[in-house]
Amino acid sequence: MAAAPIAIRSTGLVTSVGLSAPAACAAMRCKLTNPSETRFIDSAGEWIMGHGVPLDEPWRGLAKLTKMAALAIDECLAGVASEERRDIPLLLCVAERERPGRLEGLDDRLFVDIANELNIRFASTSRVIAQGRVSVAVALGHARRLIQEQKVARVLIAATDTLLTWPTLSKYEHSDRLLTNRNSNGFMPGEGAGALLIEGPAGQDELLCTGLGFGVEKAHIDSGEPLRADGLATALKAALTEAAQEMHDLDFRITDVSGEQYYFKEASLALSRTLRKRKEEFDIWHPAECTGEAGALAGVSIIALADASCRKHFAPGPQILAHLANDAGQRAAITLQFHAGS
Image 1 (cartoon, helix red, strand yellow):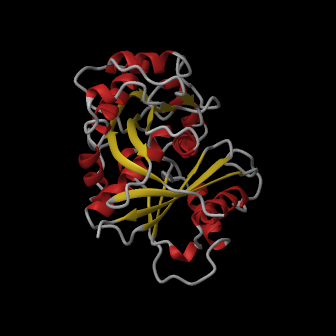
Image 2 (tube, one colour):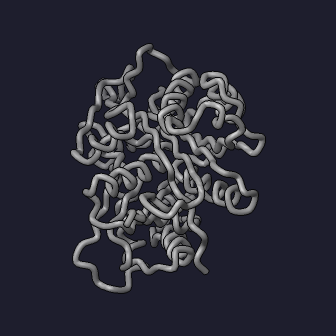
């Protein structure tokens, strides 16, 4: 059964390749990247490379997450009058609780710090969604219910995350998951923040979320079990069902894959299990090649890039598939459609 769509009204992004959505998306379009040496050394005595966000002050920890989130939210709400910003529900997406080296305060202090930084009082229906890379997909489901069932006018989704802390990096480095001179099967860590303003459809010139799907992969990256992409295939089928579409109806894909062979293999297997008609081209984009692996930011980066690509007319078409995956096995899929004006 097709689900009623919701619209992405505006976006905000703070990344290593751009401190606004237009700048970051332009860099992603050109495949620009800006890694630099972190403050940490790996077991071979070499500097770990990462995608740090350059801010005016050398903030770290929760303070930097707060500053990045505030910048992204402020950009996203630029078209909303100051008196209308009060009592908007904020769905704050952060790292999953299984994340190695997860910062303390993500579930309580961060929300308050962001509200104080922006001097905004968010609605009581706000919540923190601690589900890492799939957080934004979960948040879109909550936003859809708030708009369609509780008749909320608009919902703000924000994500802020960093992997550039020693407890996190040391765990991934010892697991041979970081991209180094000795390991090509790995990712480059990053950080950043983003925001999405969600409203009901207006009818033209807007990116619509037309379907959501979720699944669980038992053969996750640390399981050692043979991968069949059951969880992602389940998520894809559910999202396509909500959108009343088939895989061959879509024009291209944007995903959170960030360099590890496991996730590229999973994407390929899931596609083979859901694509029933031959397509000459079905491109796959991955913003993390520019921003680094930035955890909960992935979903906002994907949607912001989808929106910019359609508005700037460099997208292969208006029908887009996004999918996201957590290391612990959670999978999510999002179908998007850009509705241009007449």
